[in-house]
Image (tube, rainbow over all chains, first blue to last red; front, side, top):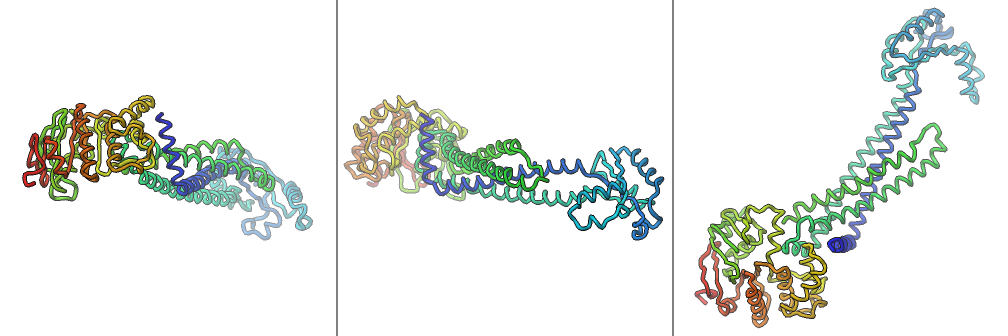
Length: 302
Length: 229
């Protein structure tokens, strides 16, 4: 009986405010889709970071015959075997160092030929031009500085490079994009909340006769507010569901299209998408309910 | 039933009090006219009874409750024991007569069976038996006010508050409404009625309370509208 009454009120309210309800649904859907998108992008970036940082190495390139003539760092001649072994031994003694792998000039040449087999450079490059190097895997990849300060400028070392610094630029860019998406989402959420507040007020105003009588005959304020709050919540829920479908649709596109064309990126799986949906739904229900409650708080006082 | 102890009410951003130093008591079962020119404080008096406003000073007791100390969430419980009628009827135009009366019970969560039983009874009582399915717009002013009274009375209030219930009605219709209010009063319901209608007050010879610029200037049992009429 109570439920019947409340729901008939909601139906009337939603229909009377059809355009506003539609605006609320769309703005909630868009902001929540952005919320889900931002959460997913965060997961994506994190998993990419984990994946790539796990594989990055610090490389110490040693001087070869060619460098000895052209590179100032190698002016004391190409690296000797003793120098190399000394550096390797020192590296092994560092706790920071997980593994050291020695790549000879011949191996570097083979790798190069393999990677660049379609390039005209491949036939010009000779094994003598390639550098011998020590590839180091660190236990903590962020502490690259330790290696570079210890070995750069050492006799026989041409340069120390950290692949991480190359990736960092990419990840900084991705994080920046993510932060921008979160900012946009916040803005959209604010817009959605304001829209809900406004819609609820209009709805309360258009039914002020009813609510006035309800107050007079002693209906509790909860009972007076409930239809408005549920109205906002239902619109929010519809928006949230729409957002979920949007996310699933977009992911379907990524999974089927982009993943095939960009195999380098290991895209997050369906499980990640489904793990985001509850947040979207909860926000989609809680946000309008709270917004409506506060919109009415002053408006429908006893 | 009602007790005002030295009640004053000053609205925010206003200098002159709307009510000042009003003390009075109304017993169970009384019929009281509240008279006074516009701006004399009648509406404020009624708003205090309904706890739409709180007294600035003094205390207002209604049905044994100190309204000034009553917390907001308990106010509905008190209002369920009050009935209210207005000059402008305040019916819902898109609901039938029966639905309008039933609305008052629905929103306080009364069971459907009880509503179905009481609504026709109370419509009979106000002389609108069988008009359940009419829309308020199809009724005359007097009939609309009867619907409003039915709605106010359907929950059997102990106190009925009427703010110029005959203000929009012609004299004959007003007499009918007054007979109805008198009948309700005889069932034991206390009635407080604000009015400008001298004829009615003079005919009924009930207790008259007169306010003037917020002060109680006359409290007369079996009184008339005014001395100068």
